[in-house]
Amino acid sequence: MNRKYVIVLLLAIGVCSEMRAQNVFNIEEVIHRAQSQSPAFRQTETRKENRFWQYRSYRTNYNPQIRMNNNGGAFYTNSISPIRQPDGTLIYLPVNQFNPGVNFSLQQPLQWTNTMISVNSSYNYFKDVTNNTSQWNGAPMYIQLNQPLLSYNKYKWDRLIEPIRYEESKRDYAEGMEQIGRDAVNFFFSVMDAQVNLQIAKFNLANNDTIYKIEQGRYNIGTTSEDKLLQVELQLLRSRQDVGQANLALQTASLDMRTYIGLRNGESFELVLPEKIPVFEVSEDEALAYAKETRSAYVAFERRRMETDAAVAQVRGSLYQVGLTAAFGLNNVGQSVSDLYQNPSKQQVATFSFNVPIVDWGRRRSAMQTAYATKRLNDYVIAQDEVTFEQQILTQVRQFEMLYLQLEITKKADEVALKRYNVAQNRYLIGKIDITNLNIALTEKDNAKRGYITALRSFWTAYYDLRRLTLYDFAEKKYLYNPYSKE
Image 1: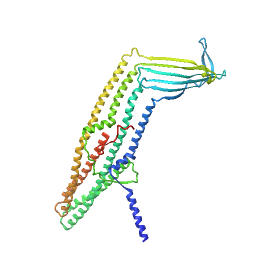
Image 2: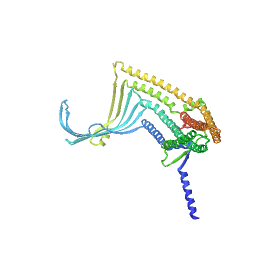
Image 3: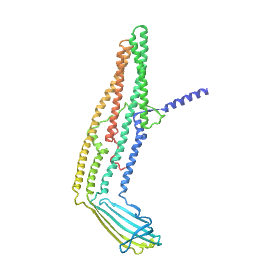
Image 4: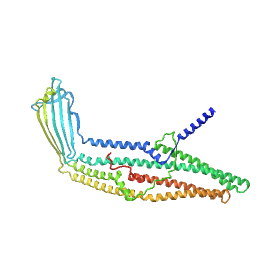
C-alpha cells in the first residue's frame, strides 16, 4: 500500500512540474513582460536615464562653481634664455628657476546678460636656484567681470530650449513603452498565427486520415474509384507536410517572441486567443486634443522653432566680437604667503577687446540671409510635420469603426465556416457529396479562421497605435503620460 502511495505521489509531482513548465500567457501578460524585462525596455530605460543626466548637467551651468587652475607658465626652467636688460638689450644667460602658481575662483554666470562674474585668489612663487633667492606674489582677493557685447547668449537660449527638450524626453519614454507594447502585439500574433496554423494542420491531418480510411474501405468494396482514393491519399500526405511546416513555423515564431520579451530558454509557453476586446468610443477631436496634450512631437514643434531662432541669434552674435573684462582687488609681494596679506595694494584692470570687420564684401549679409533662409525652411518643414501629425491621429481614429465591424464579420464567418464544414463532412460520410466539395469546405473553414486571427491582430495593433499616438487609454479612460505631473 505504501508503495502505491509513493507511485501516486511521484506521478503527481511530475504532473505539477509539467504544469509549471508550460506557461499560459494572454496578450496582456506578454505585453507586461515586454514592458518590464525585455531588452527593448532596458534600452528605453537607459535612454530615459541618459536624458535625465543631460538635463541635470544643463542645470549645473547656472550654479556657482569653485575652480582651481595653475598660472599657465612653466613650473620649472633650466635653460639658457634671453634676459632683457634695463637699457633694452638682450643677454643670454643660464636660468634655473621654479615658478609655480595656483588660482582659486568662485564663478557665477548671469544668464540674462551673458556675464561671468567671479571672486578670485591668485598665488605665485618664484625661486631662482642659481642665486638662491625666492619671492611670493599674488592677489589675495579680486573680483573679475567678463562681459561679451553683441554676442550670442547661450545661457538665455538654453534656459528656453533645454526644459522643453527634457519634457520631450519624458514623453518619448512613455511613447517608447507603448511602442514596446505594440511590437509585443505583433510578436504575440505571429506566434498565435503559427499556433492556430498548427492546430488547423493537426485537425486536418486527423480528418484526412479518417477520410482516407473510409475511402480505402469504399475502394475495397468497389464503391469508389482508384482516382478518388489517390486524391485522398495525396491530401493526407499534404496534411502531414503541413503539420511539419506548421511545427517549424511555431518554433521560429516562439523563439522570436521569447527573445523579444526576455523569456528564459527553458521556459515554454502557450498563448490564449484574446477574443475579449476593449470596447470604447473615440472622436477625432478628442483624440487630437489628447495627442496635443501629451505627445512629444507636439512640444518638439515648439523646441524646433526655438532652435531655429537660436541659430539665427548665434549667427548674428558671431558678426562682431566685442568684449569687456574688468577686475578690482588687492595684490602684494613678499617673502612668504603671509606677507601677501600685510598692507596689500589695490589692483585695477580693465580690458576692452573688439574685432569688427570694416569691409567684408557682403560676408555678414550673406551669413544673415543664409540663417534667415534656413529658418524659413525649418518653419515650412515644421508646419508640414504638424499637418502630418494631425492627419496620422485622424486616420487612426477613423479605422476603429471599420475594425469593430471587421471583427464582428470575421468572427461570424469563422463560426459559419466551421459549421458548414461539419455539415459537409457528415454529408460526405453518407455519400451525399464527393471529396472535392469537402475540400472546398475545409479550405473555407481554414481561411475563415485565419481571417479572424488577422482581424484580431489588426484591432490590437491599431489599439496600441492609438495609445502610442495619443498617450491616452480610451478603454480605461486614463492618461498614459500625465502632462501635469510635477515629476
